[in-house]
Amino acid sequence: MTATVFPLEKFQNLATPFYYYDTALLDQTLRTINEQTAPYPTFQVHYAVKACTNPKVLSHIVSAGLGADCVSGGEIQACLEAGFPARKIVFAGVGKADWEIRLALEAGIGCFNVESVPELEVINELAERQDTEARVCFRINPDVGAHTHSNITTGLAENKFGIAMEDMERVIALAHSMSHIHFSGLHFHIGSQILEMDDFAALCLRINELQDRLEAQGIGPVEHINVGGGLGIDYADPDAHPVPDFKPYFQTYARHLKLRPGQQLHFELGRAIVGQCGSLITRCLYVKEGSRKRFAIVDAGMTELIRPALYHALHRIQNLSSQGHHMNYDVVGPICESSDVFATEYALPETQRGNLLAIRSAGAYGETMASQYNSRRLPDSYTTEDLS
Image (cartoon, rainbow, N blue to C red; front, side, top):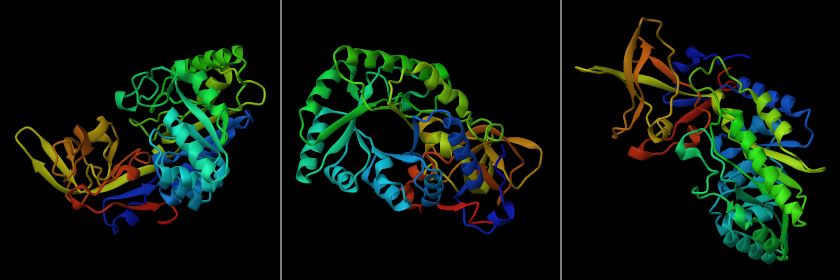
């Protein structure tokens, strides 16, 4: 597996900050996913588009044959424009607006992942107006915890996502009574940046229990089981693990999930697909020496990459311009917020004004979460092909 190589000479003349996507690494990641799912013909992988909606990145994912998991009308439109077949698009989210539902119905997407009874009622009403049928899966909150940051757990009873397990049968019966709804399966998601396979095994056991419960009441088997995504990446050492270890991830579901004959199993991977191929390239503006701290002030900030400020997330930082002896720096941005910090007491080769730094593993939830706070412009982006 090849780690990212940065074309430093090409970077020198580009305005910073910008995102750089190693599309050769992205393609390698996509090939690995297809190789690891090949033994399991009922496995279907959808890309969780919220991780990165860059059109050039989407084009590579389309070419690999993956479907798309969308959480907004804008993401659906981006996927349709990128060439994803509508039938391979699923639409999730707790707050789908009417215009988004109409867009999805008009496009003929594969499935709505429904999270509440009021949402189901609106989808049925809008489908009736269009004289069409909406295919739905119900997102069930499995009350399964995950070893990850509290802000990105989604499968606990106190989280806003999904329908409570005790309401599952009632909601399925309601769907069967609706003239413009086709109930097709169950959807689950327990969180993000999960590295312990036991968390996914626990989800499998809960799904097995729920399927047994449904069948004991004469319901099912359902056509589709969607287990979401959540597989994490190595933020500390991206060059050691440029492609996540997909084999044990898919094997966990193959071993522990009791699929019924004919059932399709769907995955919604985002970070694991694009996280390692993207880096935020920034230039050092100043080195500020304080009585207790040495600051490397760069031209990227929380407006370009909010994860450290939002989640206290760790990203490896490389000085691409210096091979000097290492010194400790607080790497900070220019935004007028004390939380605009990428790292504290971080060892870098001696850093000077004008040096280019790469903030690694930023392909997921980097560019797509960028903002224009402080009236800053959104970052540009480049791919391997752009700079070849």
